[in-house]
Length: 188
Image (cartoon, rainbow, N blue to C red; front, side):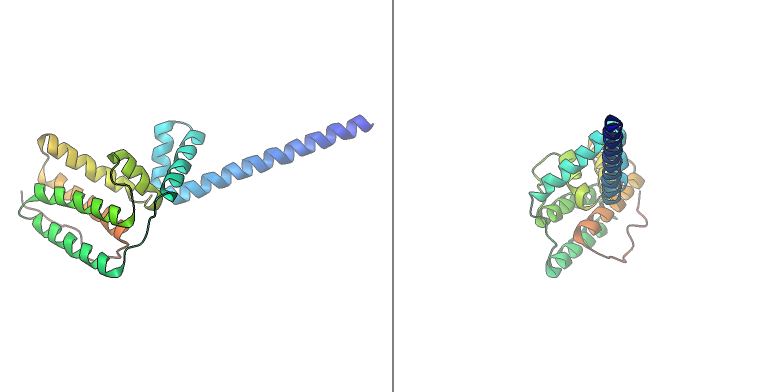
């Protein structure tokens, strides 16, 4: 009889441990999914394994924790906002040049906030995803269009889309709550 109680106790303890493990895994998934948004799904699709994807996202968080990410002072945000308006205005006459300037300006804001901008694009995007999980896909789309344009050119409409994507990333990094419309039209 005593052996039966020991077996029951072991089974109950194992069941409690399993339930706690699954609860913690579910909680981790919810936290990462909420923080990274679409980037969580993208990383999951890329790795094909939830555990591996979540380890990757947690490693990103640890890497970014080592950086001193900070908000920009109001006067610096306003200076960058003025620069953005200038880049955006340039788009009408020089879409190609404006795309290059938009990419550069996004990089400057990242650096001013404390991100490591000396790494390759994928690492920068991964780092930005920790703070801006909702817009990192916009960063990837803008960068893709800019690279395709540099390799052989794209239509003006695609350059306009790149500017819209860069604008979303810029606003998020800047902490701007801009009510200005993004570029709505462009000359061919």
